[in-house]
Every structure is written in C-alpha cells, then in structure tokens.
Image 1 (cartoon, rainbow, N blue to C red):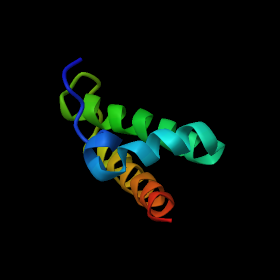
Image 2 (image 1 turned 120 degrees about the horizontal axis):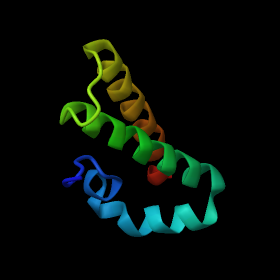
Image 3 (image 1 turned 90 degrees about the vertical axis):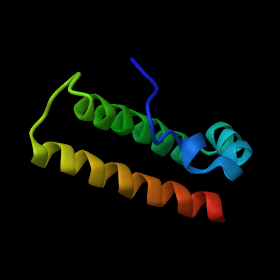
Image 4 (image 1 turned 90 degrees about the horizontal axis):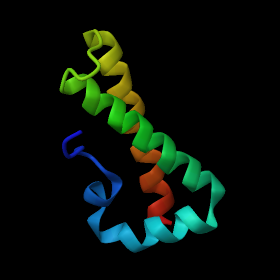
Amino acid sequence: MSHTPHELHEEFPDKVAKIAELKQSDAHFARLADEYHEVNRAVHRAETNVEPVDNLAEGELRKKRAALKDEIYRMLAD
C-alpha cells in the first residue's frame, strides 16, 4: 500500500517523542493509538478504493478517526 496520510507522527510532529513515551507507559494511550491507526488505514483504503465503502460508511470512519485524534491530542497536551 502507498503512503498512508494522517499518521500520528505527521499530525503531531512536535509530539513524536511523547507519543512514543506514552505508547510504552500508558496502556490506554497505546490502545487509542492502535485504534487510530486501524481506523486511519481503513479510511485510506476507502479513499483509494482498495476497499470501497459507501459514502455514509466512509464518513463514519472519518468521524471516528477525528474523535480518536481529539482524545489523543488531549492526552498529549497534558
């Protein structure tokens, strides 16, 4: 698969070290990051028609990705 946009290290380039640290030290953060990556890849596959879905399903995936990203950001901001 080609480059997947919206990876966490690209979304928060100034927080790369903190992301790595929290993945190791905080199980909840690690689960959120894993879920974000799964959803992000699903969005990318839908957008590139590798695994086409209808517009509603793609929109729901994008909303879920945004909600996860917001929660991750709150944890990174602490």
